[in-house]
Amino acid sequence: MAPTLRARIFGLLRYTDPSPSARRWRALHLTVLGIGLLAVILLSIDELPREIKHWLRVVIWAVTVVFFLEYLLRLWVAPEATRFDQQSPTMARARWAMSVSGLIGLLAVMPAAMLAGGYGITGSDTASVFCILWILKLGLHAPAFGTLSRVVSNERAPIASVLILFGIVLMLAATAAHLLERVRQPDQFGSLPGAMWWAVVTLTTTGYGDVVPHTVGGKMIGAMLMISGIIVLALMTGVLATGFAQEERRREYLRVWDQVARVPIFASLGVVTLSEIVGKLRTRYYPPRITVVRRGDVGDSMFFISSGEVEVRLPNGGAVRLGDGAFFGEMALLERQPRTASVATIKPTTLLVLYASDFYEIASHIPALAEAVEVEARRRREENLGRQPGEPGR
Ligand code: CMP
Image 1 (cartoon, rainbow, N blue to C red):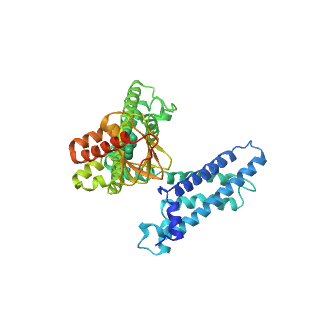
Image 2 (cartoon, protein in one colour):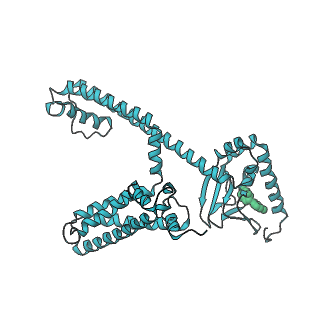
Image 3 (cartoon, rainbow, N blue to C red):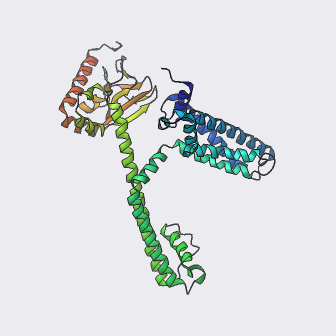
């Protein structure tokens, strides 16, 4: 059954849709967003001539109208989301409106209501400053934001430990500085909140320099606090970086697992062997007319075509097309020589990449797979040797 107009628009508006039309829409959306934000920033400069300010306001209005239409469209297509499968269209729309993406969409058009209320166009530009909330829309374009919330959720125990450590060091240092400095500097260290302000500025390695310890004891506490600050920040960075890397590995594993079934050479492998290979493959999406492999380059990986089509441009002028399930780039790895041909995409293509080190490791574990790749490489080599210059490929 052909998808309905609503389903097609839903697909187009999805921030993660890999199709070329959805990518074009996202590029347009980002351009409009960039122009709008630039206009808001420029409008805050008092010295600009009135004429320019007028045009900037027009731009802000136009961008707001685009965002308003986008909001209505997203509201209309909300029932298409699989997470609202079990709900009535009205309920799905209400739930979307209350979601992060819905609330950001609403915030983006709210300043327009204020502008329409008489501000901005006729007098003060205060309301237009709120258009800076459009920046939140940028967050919706960053898939890593979803990852970030998952990382924070997965790593909440170590994050909480680091925060507790931060709190303990902060309170101990603030109390010690309060006791040591309060006589010399009653204004700054006379109260615990005052000393805590100094401790936060020092512990986070910000160091405004507005409050400085004067006693020897205070300076020693300050020195220890600075060193602790670096350690605490390093710990937090480590926890988040590891969490991000693990989350990305998990997501990539699922993406590859979905794609790998389309490659016949993996079809006969058992689940255990397959899961070992899946952990080593990476997905890469290429638009048409992109050269993936260049003749003469050093080969550091081989590729399996999960979907799409590529053209192998042979040195003798011939060309061979490879489609779903085929592989290429194996000859450089097997013979440890430069690439024998250039390979470019013909259609939008999803490839599974296997790096050389992983290929050699897999080849030693799974001889059947290595042999299948070698047999095909040998056939290709013989075919290339036997083919006359200028003779087209199969
Ligand atoms: P490699 O030499 O690493 O890089 C270019 C790739 O093109 C090569 O590996 C093969 O995978 C592929 N290739 C070369 N010749 C042929 C052929 N005759 N038929 C299909 N693929 C080929």
